[in-house]
Amino acid sequence: MSSLKITNITNRTGDSGPIISGITTVSGTGNVKLPSGTTAQRVGIESGSLRYNSDTNNLEFYNGTQWLTISSTDRGIGYRGVFGGGAITPTNSNVIDYITIASVGNATDFGDLTTLRTYLAACSSSTRGIFGGGGPGPSNVIDYITIASVGNATDFGDLTAPRDRVSACSSSTRGVSGSGNSGGINFNTIDYITIASVGNAIDFGDLTISRRSTGACSSSTRGVFGGGYVAPANSNVIDYITIASVGNATDFGDLTATRQELAACSSSTRGVFGGGFAPLSSNVIDYITIATTGNATDFGDLTVSREALSACSSITRGVFGGGSPGTQNVIDYITISTTGNATDFGDLTIARGALAACSNNHGGLL
Image (cartoon, rainbow, N blue to C red):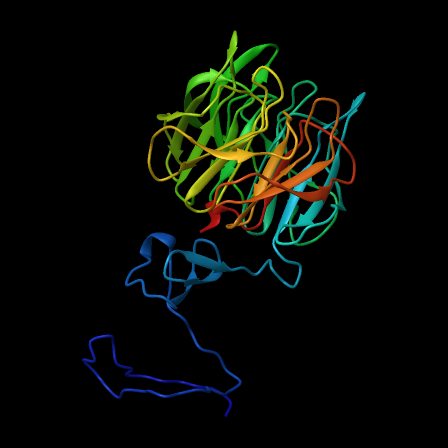
């Protein structure tokens, strides 16, 4: 049989025939075309539903609780977390290294960023990782990598304004950066890029307050920015945006503790914020339900108290890497859907703080 073509299959109400039942094998050298549509067009959800998502360019299935991606990037490598840049006393780093999130073990060298920099931000689609901003300078540089490969980063474009101590989050198509600092002046700037293209960032709107050193995470629809520094003190403010739109952020609630230089990651439903400086290095982990608003809830503790760390995730596991004081190579992880203390994962290739991280399976991609 060279191809397979079936027409006039019954719908769920049985209105037309014939009814095909008891099939265990379909053979052929052709293909079967699945239902296709955008994330917003998901309808008639039943456990085991399978479709092609035209927003993410991936197959996905519904497990009875949430849509899970069958990603083209997971070609035997597992879902990857990638860490880039940072501070290596007494200089800055362009090092990129990666881990397989579902495993444990030490990170592996990936390549180099286009420039040495620290206090930068990262976000990602299921295929491409983006690194933007940073210091010294500060910088407006944006560069990108292909997460499933290894190699050096490539120039993408520029942020709307040079700044360091910036954070970022993303959906499957759009990366959004917020907050930052330049010359001691805090920013409320939010700007965005289309991840699959190259080019300069575009103004999105403003955060509720000007601040730097926030943590950011996302679902597929909503980006959340938490904590930071608002002169002359640390902040517990959380605010949110709708990623697909433009406009100013809206108040969400408060973190469990005021702190800056924290890191955040997410599943499709829950955002997790870890570490920070408050005013000493913190091991606090707290969480929010992204689709709602309200104050954060205690989750547990990191294995080591630290600030200027980074975080990335799969849809089930959050990973925190690096940090200060000094420079640290610590990587630890949590199961996002539960609560509890973090567990040791392994080590970065080099100890460093003020780095950034992203992955090809985070909560913004579903």
